Image (cartoon, rainbow, N blue to C red; front, side):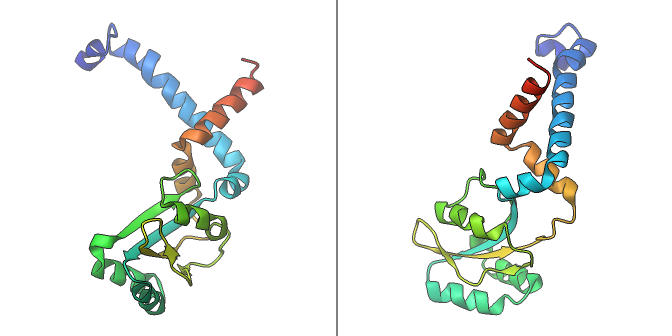
Length: 168
């Protein structure tokens, strides 16, 4: 009740009705839209799951590619290069990425087998990123729906869809 009043509402009930409920409804509608258009959105937004290790020399990148035979090996290499590695998790064309990695999404989202990408990506800063693509089967669909739900550009597309659908 105190928080609601600090936010300018008369009480908790008014806060729930005026602030929380509309947001919850919008989130449900976004989830329904994404679920109904899942395959098309995976393609349009180039949805991929990535891990990366960044090194200074191309020769280092090649050595990592040769060592990373599976995810366990790649994860061990990430631990070894812990200051320069990252599990990016689910990324889309709208994720803030190095521009050269973003360009590579055109190929990566189409992969149907998990594994290390056979060539390193030379980043805009001149360093080399070794990428590992995983969960290419997208087995937990809800994780992808949740990730797309917060994509700002897609939120606008969905809002526009529902406004047109219901003649607003």
